[in-house]
Image (cartoon, rainbow, N blue to C red; front, side, top):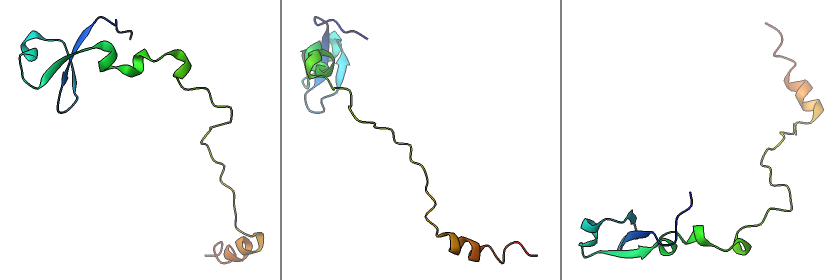
Length: 83
């Protein structure tokens, strides 16, 4: 969603919470009027400073590798098949 730079917002001075502009809330002592750039600075960053694409593979899928030695697996399964 694009926010026009001229749009006004309200910010709570102590908590930093951002609200849509409202004349009634502006009368409160702990609320100040701010511009869209002050309220949402991440939306107005120049394109050069935004994150770059990774040059390496960042996939998080991991293949499970069986680390059990072959002789141990055979010995462990000997008594399981008989009833």
